Image (cartoon, rainbow, N blue to C red):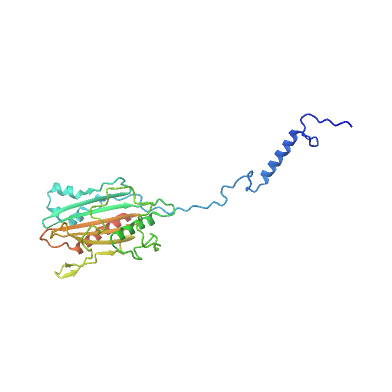
Length: 306
């Protein structure tokens, strides 16, 4: 029997040529790709399938800060620092301009301080403005600022309350022991530090209880307000810390430091008012210092609101 000869280039499968077989395979692959549901390796991939929508927390209200040395009027400064009026005109003008706090980023933190001496006492007054920014997309600037504020409040020895423990939206924060020291800090770049009188009383020998007495306008002694407490009517959250101490061992002089710290949106403001009495002078009046420090703080709340 004579064997059938195959043409050159055939595959040996029913006489189908190699070129024809390749065409069949290609057509099958094309058909598979067109009918794929997107899950196969040859089909198109739906990049949106199963993708969640990221939600970013709202930014803080403030994108910049007030100029601190120009935020208090000359008449107010003269009332805060009586010794200014006794200085020569040139020195008085320099003292009224204040001394800016050294800082590396004026968009995030600024401050200013003033000082004057009187015959029987000396007083200093300082401001510290800090704009807090959250680096976590799910945490707003206001919430981060509240955590930083709570850390300052606890450091000052003022307990957190329901009114002071806010997340910036009027609800209660889930943690009452937050110190505001977690990462990211959100407190901005390193600075030269806050004004000399800090809100913490750890370096003071005083109790800060404010249990002394003051003299009212009618000459009668009146009890001084508490030394450490939450202020409910100032900004979004606020507290006051009043500490008495002695400037040195064996000294009969007394130093009183009143700090008012408040938060308005993503900005934290610290007002520090210090009076040091002379050796034979009367102790500083806590009520006067507290009232004046709070008065300045309220005026600053309005300025930030504007």
